[in-house]
Image (cartoon, rainbow, N blue to C red; front, side):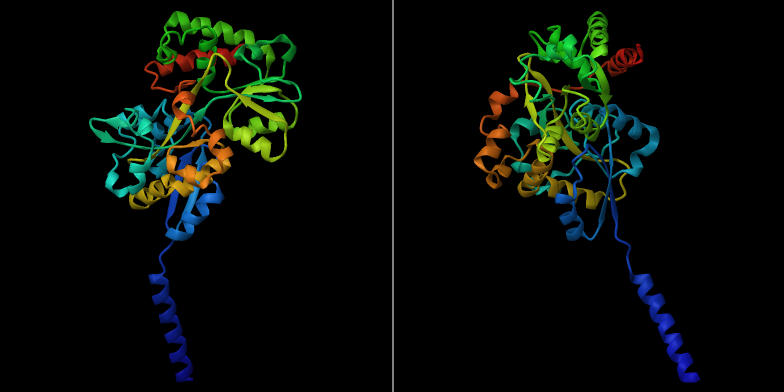
Length: 354
């Protein structure tokens, strides 16, 4: 009996001992754009670092900023702000300044991207360029035998109820381009006057009869095309990629007016309690091989040009890595919008109009 009790006590003590030494795997929480936490590349990071990556997705830059300012910054470790809000997030102290010595692959990133002032505040760097790309015109090739050459096609009455636009300020930029407000200086798109914003609002109100739905997530627009509810839209290369994978007849083009584009950065939030793991994640995500895997999922162009060594010639050409300078001339990269609240006011008036 005593022997049995001794064994029982030993087993209980062993259980308590091992239980106290078992460390729970840390969780890295992301608030990022769709496609940036795909298992195709995140799973390997989880295995290497014995952690879990938990991702929430944002539908717009404003949603990201609202969550961070609303006190949720401590809920996330890594965010992926685009070039329209990256500066304000850094300046507001919502992200932590980076120690670049902890991110060895930073030096491999495109100097065209790292030299921009978007994530620099008072001499400190707050983000690493991750992916970049356009806001292209996406279309159903069974409806358009030739790529539409102008954004004006979205206003064509014959596509009534068959068009989609993004529920985002990018749609304001696009209408401003049609009105010529990007000439001679494309940065004017992000500094429109009250008079110009009113003209943009009128232009977008003319578009409303053609709009089947304003999409807010990439998957939503992919489904609209797949279900033949829309024939053309402003979208992302992500949706083109998704539709091609299911053999949907999709085309993508940059119209003659050119288009806006974005540079997504990875930042560590000021409130992160997993900063060391977050640094490891940033390094992993900008390494050339990971960048290739992200490109496979999203169709976006990698910030690390060395990713090209893992691509076919066709992939390099499709991502414009063979002629970056000329391609970027057709993209007006998003910039900080000083009067963002006014832009949102105009956009909300457009959405509310019947």
